[in-house]
Image: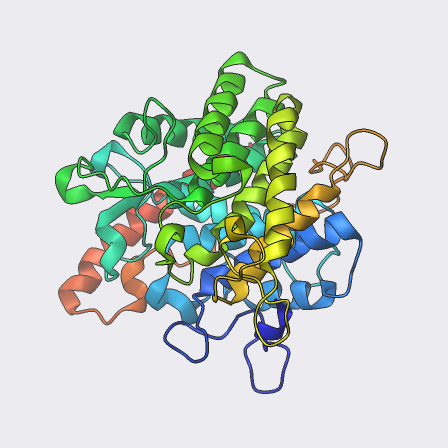
Length: 419
């Protein structure tokens, strides 16, 4: 996987993969770089191999942005709430595993995660009666779309921050976004999770395509809240229902399968990586909600065996494809996503609950977590979307009003978070 990364070479940009598409030979959007660092943090946590730790630290810090909120202006032309959310979840993973602390003067892992949450908490609006939009800025084409992954990242991060800090405000936000997502129908009564819907239809035109990372991000968030609430019945039921839906849809024959694109290998660059997040978050779910272990660990094992067999292609004879169910018949695809997915599902099998050393569960600030947070993180962020686009005099007048209103909201939020 790391042969695709050149950010540590002279003249390259630290923290990011080559991209975005169609840059040859492969191109990757900014979010997948953050997701890759998250996978490598877990790799270190499971294996103890610190080979890449300095690259991980440098890469995340380089992309933290001018306001330490995982929103560098260089990527504003494609910035989604889900993009920022993935970098925030990676920072959260660093805090939960006691990953090596940043250098003096750099933001802590917990503070970065808090900044992402704080900046997103003021972006929900009244269209469709709530929820986050897909894209951050009005000039982006996805600004009229509300989707499960953007809201799922926010839910996941809120649940994990609630557990780590024991601050109930995070849990309240997470529960609110759960209620909105189920209420609008992006999570249906059978716990299938659909992609999204447009605000022009009041979010009634639901795109019912299903992606595995949606199941993973919501399932782990629910498991975190189950753990945080000391095993509440409602979160146990939701974890069980999400897990049943996940296994029924994405593990035919016990092997992870990306149903939206794998049948004909019509996957986008992004989709090739989705199994990485699904399998890692399933593994963490077993730690947060132990009653899921007997269902999850067998499919992680069978998927790992199948993934390893699929890593038999390319000129080196060990390039990984996506079609794990094809066994040793390499499917001809290659890239960061395929390598990351295979790596992830294999190392999750290092989890042992009997007759072995168990990989430590995510930490909290009361169980050994050392990352020092900042409840006001993100307060210096650019909250006015028009601030990075050319504006007319009328625009600037409207923006002044918008900025004032938004800053009032941000100030109130940060004050509440501090309490």
